[in-house]
Length: 137
Image 1: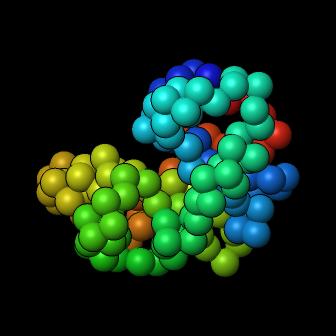
Image 2: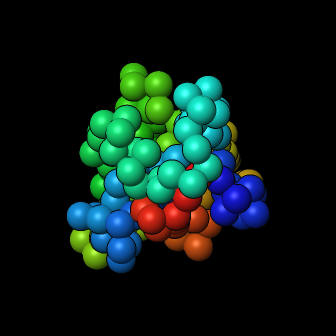
């Protein structure tokens, strides 16, 4: 949670070891922080263990690097998701948020030079905050 606050991002990608698709455990958001608070989760609990206790499955959140922006927006709306994990052939590329999508869909050619067509046009890996599974809440 401290990493999320320090980076001014609204989610943290949780990985067990190196940042590879096989090591991703999930995404923690402010809503998850609220859930941990309501459940009285001790701050000393490892975030990876806490996520596994929720039986959270991140695969429905996975999208390919070359997926169309509109398709991702539809998936987010259908599943009430605010964050998607973007994967490419080389592994995890970053996180796509509903804010990213809103900005892309609202952009015009004059605003950004071109309207992003795929998720890869939007994802900025340096904005993705990664937290190790052994970190505490």
